[in-house]
Length: 328
Image (cartoon, helix red, strand yellow):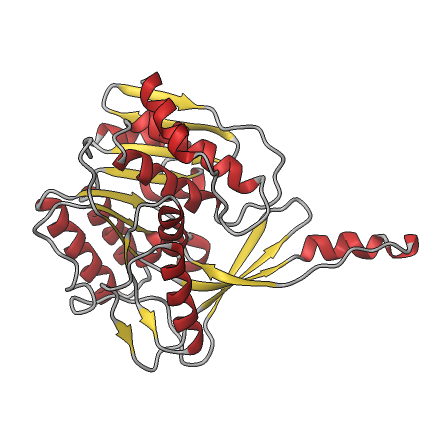
């Protein structure tokens, strides 16, 4: 676990473009046509991806993370790289894939601000893929705080194996590995190869983060999320289990604690889990323990979902970290 001596943070994973379709707002506006005062809605185009968003939040918090992704050379790929650098990410370890077009995620937002995501592969595009070559720039000698997520589990055996091998070596050499399950079984399925890759990644991780029974139960085969969390915890893993507005479960050895989320008016949900990830990693690297890091992550995620703008973080994060340190 990180101590008061900060580690360099390295994020390994997906970076894509998000197209946000405000379907629910449009339906609401149509109902108000007769009133003569109708608001307007816009389609948004922004950087995205679990790892991309997590890395951007870390950058906003001043952590200056490395970001290793399958970098495309098309105009969208170059735009996404520029966005990451503007947010404070170091892209120097990401190798470009010539001729490859970036994938796009289409997020349809309903009347309750919930979203359904449709990955779209334009001509010439593919899911982010990794190889020993495009992961070779990641240093293994000096321990780091390493983050990756389930979007690297893309059903390509060679890509999944390359990431698992790299994570296993980093872990063996003293790096602290945090893995977000991000199963997305409805998109990627869960075949034997993907399940085996998940087992390897979980076994090489110090901390596993997941969201809801649909993720944890897909991994364990249990029908109840708490039983899934206990099963993974009993295998020696430190587990952070989110479930929407429900308290976040922290399970680690003898620790079993539920950390309440903050009650806020929700304006948006896209990137909420990724904001939690970035804030959690930052707090952990600042020396907070698991539960205090989750409290900080809950605060930052609550700010993000109740604030306009893309992945907004509070201005007083340093003070919040210090307050939590004093409380501990």
